[in-house]
Length: 127
Image (cartoon, rainbow, N blue to C red):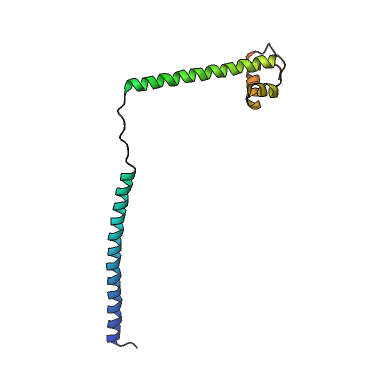
């Protein structure tokens, strides 16, 4: 059996090692916290967040008007595509030929032909 003084020495040694490890851990934690603070400061310096510009109502209105004009022009272009496809289909050109001529996807041409058929049921649009 282990004698009492030897047991006290072992327990004291283990306690001392635990105390030293705890002190070392505290030093490492402080060092890591300092490094994190430095890295955050460095990151904030490198990536300065720009302040939000003052909102100018006139500029916003002008931008909205420009977007509306662009959208209207785009819608007109789509309407033109529809008319071109319907006209060419009426002339007997198939979907692949129309797609090649107008540089459109064949599936899109077929959909436009279907729409033309629905719009003008009395006038058979050829596929």
